[in-house]
Amino acid sequence: MTNKILVTGGAGYIGSHTCIALHETGYEVVVYDNLSNSSREAINRVSTLIGQTIEFIEGDIRDAEMLRQVFTSREFFGVIHFAGLKAVGESVAKPLLYYNNNVSGTINLLEVMAEYNIKNLVFSSSATVYGDPESLPIDENSPRSCTNPYGQSKLTVEHILEDLAVSDDSWNLVALRYFNPVGAHSSGQIGEDPNDIPNNLMPYISQVAVGKLKKLSIFGDDYPTIDGTGVRDFIHVTDLAQGHVSALNYLEQLTSSRSPSDMAKSVGFLPINLGTGKGTSVLELVNAFTEVTGRDIPHQFTGRRAGDIASCYASADKAKTLLGWQAELSIADMCQDTWRWQSQNPSGYNSH
View 1 (cartoon, rainbow, N blue to C red):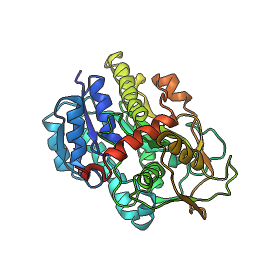
View 2: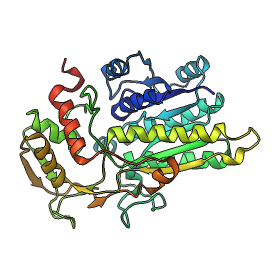
View 3: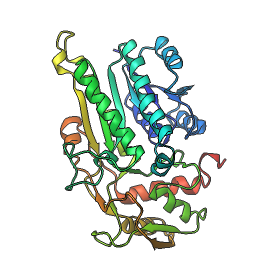
View 4: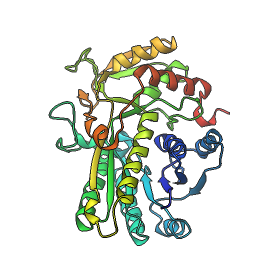
């Protein structure tokens, strides 16, 4: 069986970290990315870190002809699908762009995979599919709903994967629902490099710490939480990357242990949360960052942001039981690694 994996969006934040984890586990990686929200430099640095050149193809998942060329000349075990737009605010302003890229692009990818009989997919989903949770912690059977086009695009893809699994039981479709990825590779060489003003909390904190931004705005101090600020399940990107490898290992064991006639062992559609199972408030994260780095983070409280929820954290039991995976790294590790990346690369991949 081939151990070659196509990683769409592999030059992005989570994709680049996953490429390292895949290489360390013995998988061969081919990255396919249109570089719309990522940097070629990320792949150069991954290649340096692993000591060999990663095959990189610049291409768009909406380009079926290009994808066919990729699949025609290579034999893949499966695909890890990260390629997608991910800014909530932008999705509200440009819904068609998000549905076109995230939904149509995924349909295109699945159609080409079917043509070449590649039926193993690990999909980058999101905890946003749970909307405002009815109860905590959130497990995989919690009701799904969305408050913005970005989340809706992820949920729509999940529905497509569910329907595909029902229509053809030879598919193995794992949807990994991420909670809040933060941190960077321990080398400080790769990390989160947002275009323009960061949408996410941790890169905003670190850009304030490095002097790039003046102060942090904390949206809402009157939530029913430990200190009035929103609570989230922050997970280190290195742990998250390992979760993708565990999902692939699970599929590999499954497919190698069955005979061609034993199709009942396909997983069909399998949603799995990747989180720590613990909630941390915005203020707790800010204080932890200051404690770890010695950098004061000037901040102000402003009104709640539309669509934000009070608390959100995972039940991660299914990942542990099924994949043998659990988060290992602490909030202190997340802060330390973020600061190492940010301080060594004050302008992200354009720093050097």
